[in-house]
Image 1 (tube, rainbow, N blue to C red):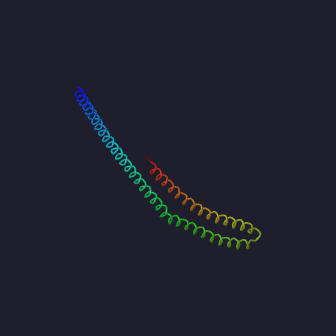
Image 2: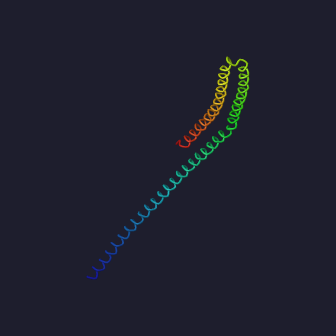
Image 3: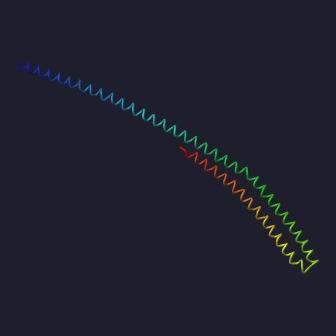
Amino acid sequence: MLDKIKAYGFQAAALVLGVLLLVQTARFHVEQLEHEKLKTSIVQAVKAQATATLKGERLTAGKEAAHAQQTQENSDEFTTSQPVRDAVHRVDLARAERVRIDAERRAATYRAQAEGNAAACSNLADRLAAFDRQLVEGVAVVGALRADLTRRDAEVVLLRKQVDVERALLAP
């Protein structure tokens, strides 16, 4: 009888161990499925993040390329307009020189007239010569100021365009 109890005990232990093995196998299978789902979701998240990063980099690269092109165009426009500003300045300098030469001639004429009527005309000749010197200085100053103003206007246009280019780069 003891043998029968032992046999039934072994059978019961084997059955319990079999059920436990079956339960453990089922749990292991569920864990494997969950692990595969987790790996799949991680791969999808990494793929989505890589796609978003690539899209952002392409957008940034496009903006940077447009910024570089606009900056170059802006600089080229300013550079190519320099000869025109220089030509205008040379015209002003030539005009100032012509006025100076004319003023010297008139001063000589005034002195000659003053010598003919020395006492009365000497003061007038000096005043007229001073007036001509002031006229020459004024014309020269106007020429220089015009050149400065023209350059300043061109620089303002350059800077305004550069601000627009910078704003375009920083725009979302």
